[in-house]
Image 1 (cartoon, rainbow, N blue to C red):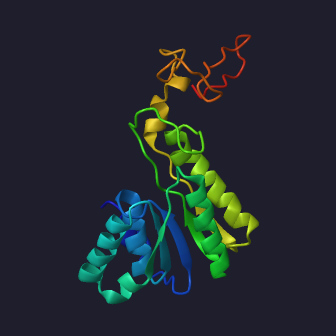
Image 2 (spheres, rainbow, N blue to C red):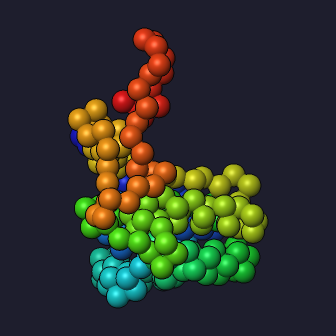
Length: 199
């Protein structure tokens, strides 16, 4: 029998615990939000779309009851916007409630090349840099509990990244611009040397 979020948390009481989940309005983030709230945790849903997050909480209220839904708080966060990330971190630090679980779940894929207002490639900003900044801002602000669990899921799609592919030695965004994250992988100098591109 396959394990589920409910089966692996059966008998666990998370009352008084606080979790922060990015991308909590769909997929893995939604299910983790549902199960953690079901087990008694307060869950901060850090989401770009407030409308979709609100709809999820309303679904929880209908399916699981108002008690579960009341443990879900929505805070805005666009991980591709560093100002938005800083605002979220500042709000969580100011709340003064230690974060026991930080699930850095949100991510985008198959997006056309574009730059954010900060001049950062948008997918890199949303999938990596936003989470990196959020984690360090929370840690520096003392918002993480001493035994906090920090979870960073990795999509299998990362293995298709052209930077790490032998078949595509160069990756160029439109216009021919190159950057430090689009350089070709380096070949080993000698047989037996470790590769640096993850292949």
